[in-house]
Length: 277
Image (cartoon, rainbow, N blue to C red; front, side):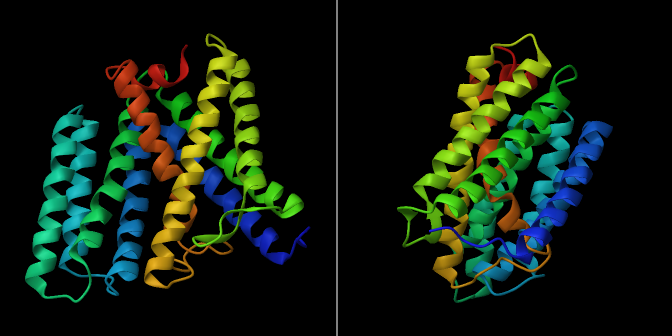
């Protein structure tokens, strides 16, 4: 059944446009500027995570999470990604320990999960942007794939409807949306490969499909978290979208997927590893 397009769509469009322009501009400006952008959004994500899983915003656990991820981001900028991952692992354990010491009623493992949920994609994105030759293009490609998958899934799901993908987790998501998102990402990846040159169009299109599915899995994962804690949005920071966690849920998972590809193919040149086939 077709769903009407409301004023919410217009609001989502303008919010997304501002975020796209800001993200691409700061990504192009350089690795340090990009790292600052990522760490700023990580701070907002950590604030929202505390609100959702603990019912608290600014507390010692928030400070621990932010401090650890900022240090991990700096270590990644200094080309010490292994130490950065160690920092995230240590902070995850420390968050669980500190949560128990504070005597909160909420589950300490959900607090600990917030460290790697925000920290791992931050490390992956900063590391990929560090590639001097292909870093900017790799991040731009990742943005294009995730945004295309999100847009394709949204419009296809609204226009076609059909069987639900996971009704107990997210009643609005459909199989048509999943396929439409993957198709949109495939086309976007193919056009990106043609624009970039020096790479295999079919291979990059195929990787785009994989990343789009991972991205949409991230969307479902964030929906599951909100359902567990009985909230509709992580916050109201982004008009038409809800919170930062609501907006970057797909990018979180896709960034980790892209980071894994880079580690497997060529960790010393992560941007090239993602793009050049």
